[in-house]
Length: 433
Image (cartoon, rainbow, N blue to C red):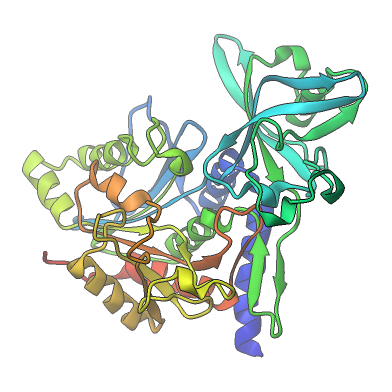
């Protein structure tokens, strides 16, 4: 029972973290607050960097991606980088979002962000969060928005109006997924958003606003072994990486925690994994430490990266959808992900490295391959490798209902991911491809 309570404590902390982070902008702000409390100093991309041995720093791009790093006190041998993403599939509000219907209802005009399971968004209490932009003097600045109340809902069509609904239904984002906002005349939404941001509606020049599921996370199961929440993919790994960083030390390697935006839509943005954000950050660290060009190449060659993004568990009702011999389950340890077409960046060397880290940390490791006749998704590892070419490995936490509005994972696995992050950040273990 004592072990169960320890694991549940970490999960409750994660669920509180997720509740306070309805999207990337809030997630980044919450990580920045935790880093500042731990003595990390914020740097800005447009200003000079003063980086000292033994110093701890973080930098933010676009308000939605973050890189934090702790520099060793001695000569830096390389980087220990752990990467995850903070965005999740959802619906984005379009400009001029309010739509009147027959002078009776007001709906919101939205578009899909990422590849969500659309049916899971129906008949749930939803709200709006993101950011608005206002002018302060000669600068456009952002203000966080979280309405923090049950604001909209996407109603299902009754079975009486679609008798074949349970035989399979192709949801249309334009006709089926518009959230109901109110009755009567339109014009209220931006007033509510402005009040949440602490500004006047007429001050708002632009916005990035998204829907999010208001249901609180929960721990459940016969022995409390499961937990469910929105945005587990990939805030759970981002949380574990941050916890690992803040509780680790390394005298030889710089420890780097980075969380990117826009993974769910391909990462091809200035704040995504395909951008120069990580590359720029590492180069500026080495420049600030006055490393020669030769030394920079050697430092990167001695570095390694863990891409941490959740993985598919065997589904209890559809076990046939999983590979024949690589079948991760909830509460059975870290998932090591492989793909012959390099959708995951793990190879024999980096896989062995990860397995040895797990052995040293005293945690279990399981493997994932897609079923050979099914295409899988991709993640950060192979994308980041195009910018920062260091040995890399893809891992994750096993979960069910990936890209649902309410996902499920195993209580015992979260602590293992935190423990692995601690082992990785503090280890001197090297890869020799």
